[in-house]
Image (tube, rainbow, N blue to C red):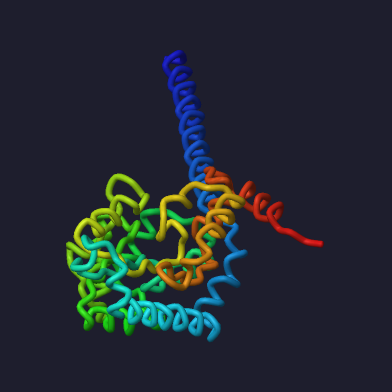
Length: 282
């Protein structure tokens, strides 16, 4: 009888130890996950406020689309058409635009991440896209409606994914953007590079203008390049900016920031150090 009580007591003690271990391990895991999700994104506050509160940002956006309209009008000049290769003269004109921070404003998503100290995650981003609440970038809607009235096709080439496509189409249509369809909204499938999608468009259309906030929106020569190489490639093309390539300002995020991190998967501490080391002072 005593041995049974002894074994029962030992069993209870072992059970308690095991339970405590698993509770402690689970708590530690949850804590680690919480710490992983905490992001040091306070540095983005100025960029988000500039986009949301600075009239200067609105002026730059209007300026970009005003220049785009001037370049589109110039392309309709008969002299310009005569200078084109014969194969392109009868092709339908097209304007290719990026979506995020080019025609749609996602700064509320950035602000939400800052307030909650969250890093970017695909799940949170998809949830934002499918809310269909992004507003239009100033000047974008007016310009694309103008292009559409002149018979120019509009293509929206984005690195949003297939699960976000319908939400994107709904958002664009609700805002009144023209020529929005399964055909014209080209999202990312296998690769993030946009060159294959641009080639699909140029097979049947003459691309007059490309408009975006990231250099990768214009050419694949910028993809995964260092800061120095991005500078060099930009300088080589100094005669196309404001002509065939129209750039919108985006200080919130982009490949410019990825280049600072050398495109690596870094911790928040490592990112902070990289940003600090990248600063040039006197």
